Length: 249
Image 1 (cartoon, helix red, strand yellow):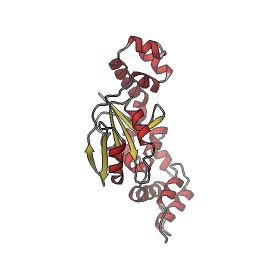
Image 2: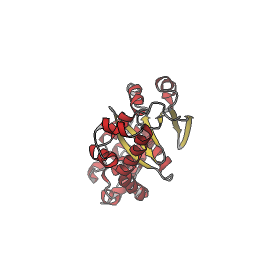
Image 3: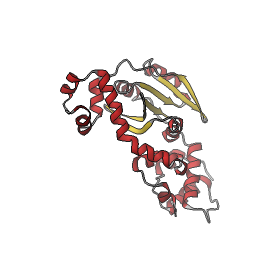
Image 4: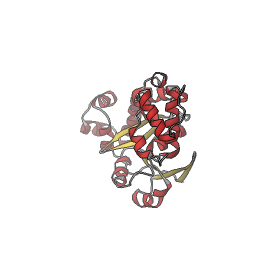
């Protein structure tokens, strides 16, 4: 069997694949192994293990991040819009924490722009990287940004995040929908809100809105955690479909 292209394999894998498609992927990973009698869940499991161990994309880092926060009372979300960027992972409780993921196969080309967007909206901001990006990341992000990487399952906090000195009320309001602004401030007009509420009040209400927006989806993930395979985590956050329905034959 030739060398497996795990990047191509990851791009071809879909949580909603039919059994025959999963069988083809398993054969790509493991060769002509014995698959008779394997359930659809077992096929998903084999693929997840192969990708989690060998593919160096963002899915594994996102799963490790989610594992870090799943028992800490936070509401978490994937892919949260922040100005012209999308934060990979955000957690909110008494404070807001934003995480941008840069895996081994990612470039840092957009990191400067992304970091400038995030620290205007979220209180604590961290870049989660493959260790190969460490020196370049230090040069690209502001000093108040945290920098984490993982050695296997162990999280290494190379630098802890400090509260952002650049929080911007208008940028925070732009994250909210019109409906959310009306609910929180009784008006959706940015200038009216900023004329009546302090920057601290806007920041606090942003956190209330984001917790409300994502709480049900994150609670679903937590309730079904033991049935969700790592590479599929974001799919189930987005859809809230019972994993047993997806994985069953």
